[in-house]
Image (cartoon, rainbow, N blue to C red; front, side, top):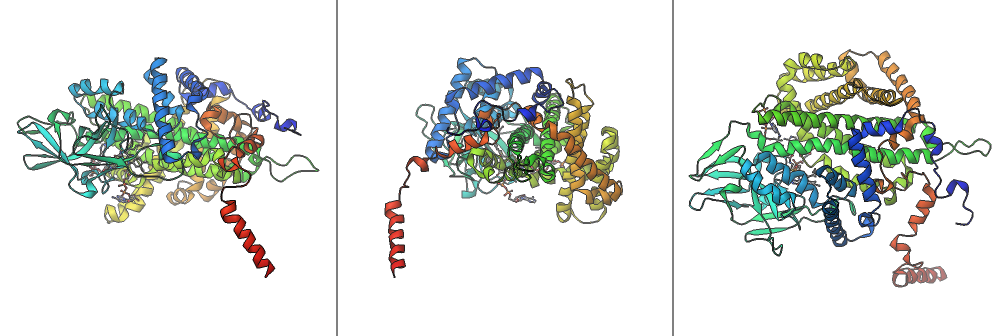
Length: 638
Ligand SMILES: CCCCCCC/C=C/C(=O)SCCNC(=O)CCNC(=O)[C@H](O)C(C)(C)COP(=O)(O)OP(=O)(O)OC[C@H]1O[C@@H](n2cnc3c(N)ncnc32)[C@H](O)[C@@H]1OP(=O)(O)O
Ligand SMILES: Cc1cc2nc3c(=O)[nH]c(=O)nc-3n(C[C@H](O)[C@H](O)[C@H](O)COP(=O)(O)OP(=O)(O)OC[C@H]3O[C@@H](n4cnc5c(N)ncnc54)[C@H](O)[C@@H]3O)c2cc1C
């Protein structure tokens, strides 16, 4: 372009000066972020494969109608599956490919809930029958639990499954409007089968909610089967965004399924109509939700790190005020207010990464124990997955919005990638368990263990968390000390639950740093981020900490001084710390966050691609504007 200065030329790394400031081995940090050299290799290879394939382009999503958007999603899902089959990708590579395609779609629920539900709640025989079909995508499944009238209260679900011993079948029925299944992803237009949750009735007796495999659509022509009424529930928050997903509504009208399609690992119904409860906790019926909640924590670190990468790179590019004698203006990343808003989010992204790793280990451990009928850690696993899902999704949703604001006006452009990232992410605070409802589960767990809390915590937590530990105990004792019911104190108990989850995140970050972490300066950077995370929360909740008496106002002031010092230590490494996420520009989907920092020419070029600029004079001018103007001229003449 005419008059393009050096600073706006393509192919120049406009952030090179920032990258040269780095005080640690970025490639080593990339391995830490990925989790292992193998994980990094898979992520790096697959993200580049997706970024380089025009079949996975996503820059036009905001200009498509709902039907065009949905059809494009189906195309991409089919193309992704063809790529997986043609390239013979492993399960791990295939999951990474779906992740980097970065589009909510029915496949999320097929792979992320339908299959895990059969694996977790199906008998060996049921797994052998249904999993091969699902793995080959010869059936497409969804997880149909929530209803129009009930979501949080699973035991309030109204759909019924009545055993007919004459025909050895269950009759699945929606007795009321509010029993209509409502929200399940993939249900609206695609899924051929559902794991449907219904109240089991045998011989006139109710046995609570159980899961059933129900076919919804013909495998020949995709038409709904007899007794099945199914459709999409309509547009959701934000243009594009989660509207690539067909969240559906489903009504059963006395649909008959074979008895062996009740998921029977946890409890069984015999052909004689006898209900048998295995000697396992009935809550294993909820096992899929526990599994997904721990994956959602890992997803939180991905979503937050994407937003932080965009905001950090743009904060280094953007200059505003502060020019001395005609020199360059100040990079906004150098303002202390920008740092105090941005760097805690950078630290949180790393903190959530490591807590996600730990939670994955905890889930694998509890799953292994369940196989040996050891249910001893199930309550803690439930409380941890519920609480950490709540904590990390709330912080991530708020963090993405803060990153939008950190980018000023340009953060509000779709081309920044932040509005869509926010719109796609925020339902994570609701799905897989409303965050408050889940914190109440944690509060209930704490109430039951508060007496052992001291020994439990002091024996298990690193010294650096004493203040955090004391805060939880204090908050619980303040609430449990008074003789009022759980409901009355629930708002306060939820605060204690948050404090408990923050303690877990801080302590696991500290434990991570006690591991061998290779690479020049890598551990030092992580120690800085860990201290920022811990001290930022201490500053934010200093009222709690001061009231416990375990810190004094002087401690609080020193902590704040230390935070400022830590921000100064992060500053030269900020760009390298977000480069370590190793996101491609395709995956980031953000002009503000592009790797080379060449933002302004890209913003300007993108504007002209908007359909509204296809004509200089807008449609509607002659019909509406011109008569208006003419009328104004007539008025002026008066
Ligand atoms: C990768 C995929 C992409 C994701 C895309 C998003 C897709 C979204 C999908 C969905 O949203 S699926 C639907 C999600 N729905 C929910 O999460 C519902 C939330 N509600 C519940 O989980 C339960 O209703 C409840 C709130 C836990 C209450 O359950 P219930 O009334 O049965 O039990 P309580 O009386 O509260 O507790 C009894 C006892 O059981 C323990 N417990 C409860 N849940 C679990 C569990 N999941 N695992 C283990 N134990 C559990 C609870 O602690 C109580 O124990 P005690 O105190 O009695 O010892
Ligand atoms: C994008 C998206 C995708 C979804 N995908 C699926 C899916 O694939 N399959 C599926 O089965 N479901 C799905 N859901 C449904 C989801 O699981 C539920 O919406 C979620 O569990 C919340 O339940 P609810 O809607 O009944 O909320 P409600 O419980 O009605 O929440 C409303 C308010 O009531 C409060 N509240 C409720 N109970 C209590 C209590 N005991 N004490 C205090 N406060 C309380 C909540 O905190 C909240 O503030 C999806 C939802 C969304 C938004």
